[in-house]
Amino acid sequence: MDDAVAVVLFFGVTAYAIFGGADFGAGFWDLVAGGPERGERPRAVVAHSIGPVWEANHVWLIFCLVVLWTGFPEAFASITLTLFVPLSLAALGIVLRGSSFAFRKEVSRTSSRRNFGAAFAGSSVLVPFCMGAVAGAIASGRVPAGGKAGDLWSSWLNATSILGGVLAVTVCAYLAAVYLFFDARRFGDPAMVEYFRRRAVAVAVVTGVVALIGIFLLRDDSPYVFDGLTSRALPFVIISALCGVGSLVLLLRDVARGARILAIGAVATVVLGWGVAQWDYILPETLTVSQAAAPDGTLTTILVVFVIAAIVILPSLGLLYVLDQKSMLEPDQ
Image (cartoon, rainbow, N blue to C red; front, side, top):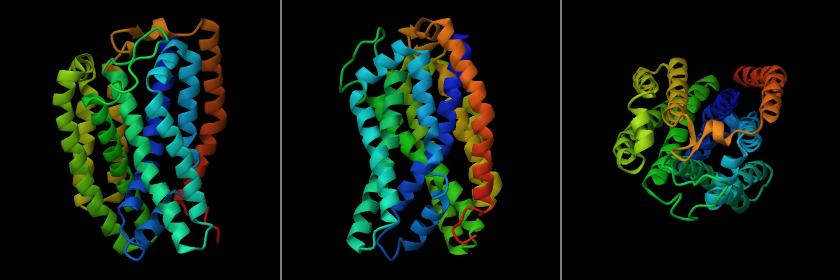
């Protein structure tokens, strides 16, 4: 039963990487769009694209925290105590990002719009970096077991965590660029289609290079996860690489829908590969999934609630995304 709850947890992590990641990546492109005049059209596409769904995309973060807290309380305690700093920065960034995105649309003064825009875009980079650093700290075995606090700084300021942070930012930017490339076509803006297509190609190459560098860093700094990625999780790594290359080819050939599907596949298999690589540890080499699991009664409750939530919530989310993709959530329709 503890294995089933761990699978549910990684289902939530994967969903958050796909939906929330693209949301943060949109903020990255808002950040680098340029000044008010040059960046006006790209920012309009970003706001138009994420406006109807940005709040729903982050329901997966709450889902993951609740499952980790209730299903694996010892791991939750160790992670939050050790990684208090990056988790606090991420929480602050999430609040700042959401409020800035909402207020930017309401204020009329140029200076206020600029300040809220900077807060939205800056926090859109800060949050995925901190999340990636947290993942790197866990993967490298720097979070102790037993509900104890590890080192407050070296736990997340190390080679694997920095790699995780940079890779998270580039992956989010890659996903967002592919989505925005698709959405700009849906909005009927040929100039922005080409704008985001070029940036998707560029960031896809950068993400691939960062991932290759990461292999060598993991070999020295996180040997357990490295061994897992090169053995039991190798099929996921290969699928991810093939999806990434396929997405790049389709981007170069100006095929938006197929590129988006393959981009999602590339990111999803990376996250799943991480989970398989460190299995059956939830904290590598110190705490297994079964050792960290809550009593059976709690695990059963989690699974029952998950099934009920899947029946009630997933169709609602699906309908939201379908209506959004059909442009039926716009104020003038």
